[in-house]
Amino acid sequence: MRKSLLAAIALLAAAPLLAGLPKGWVGRDTCATCHEDVAKAFVARPHGKAMADRAPKNLLKLEGSTLDRSCESCHGPGEAHANDPSTKNIRSLKGASTADASSGCVSCHAAQKGGLAIRTHGHERAGIACLDCHVSGHAAPAAEPMLARARGALCTGCHGSQTAQFALPYAHRNGKEPFECMSCHTVHGGTTVRGRVVEDGQQPCVACHTEKAGPQVYPHPPMAVNGCIACHTPHGSPNAFLLNRASTSQLCLECHTNTPTFHDLSKPAYRACVNCHAAVHGSQRDPKLFQE
Image (cartoon, rainbow, N blue to C red; front, top):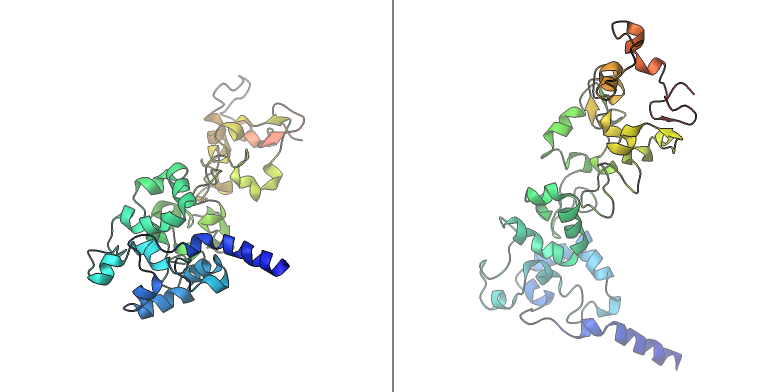
């Protein structure tokens, strides 16, 4: 009785797969009759393995299974192409427009597509296609997740200015190498805006710089308004502590223009703001951010 019940449950779970292929689809085996090497390469790569893992092992050969749909999930229905092999009646990802090149990817990865459009919309506006950063299912990735280049070199082709900043005297480096961009940035967006102003109500910087996280009784207002980048350049700077200005007085005076009259800025003592206002990230006891 128990075995019969389990078999019935398994059959119900497999019902969408047993329903067969959509109209105009022919299945992976038909594609493999001409593209045998490509089909074998796909199954051996991470994309094919992931598709295989989504279906029960005993159903991988059945018509309509996840793996059976793999070719046409990216390249579109194959019936016309099987009857009349031509590059015009099948979706080719080589030289395709951004929308066409990504259409197969986003049919499964809809969340990543939505995140790009909403959160990292610069990629969307620039017409970045999925295969500009990722390899197709047939090629071996340079890094995970299916990246076309090593993680440290992936973003540099487009973001040359930020790449150059990592070579400045003071930069976010892990030893001699820059931190990976994805240490701070979430390239597909998501529920938070990592690498911009806030993430879950906090600066993304405090994931590493925990001593600056607070909360403080007397916070420094720029932290709440513009975040860490109000004073610091995140990628690299010619100035110590990645400051936006060469001296602390220049930086502080951008906001604090109404300094008291006894602050004679012609004297060096009054140009070293942090000598007195040392708690620049916020204080637990002094509203003027004097030394703790």
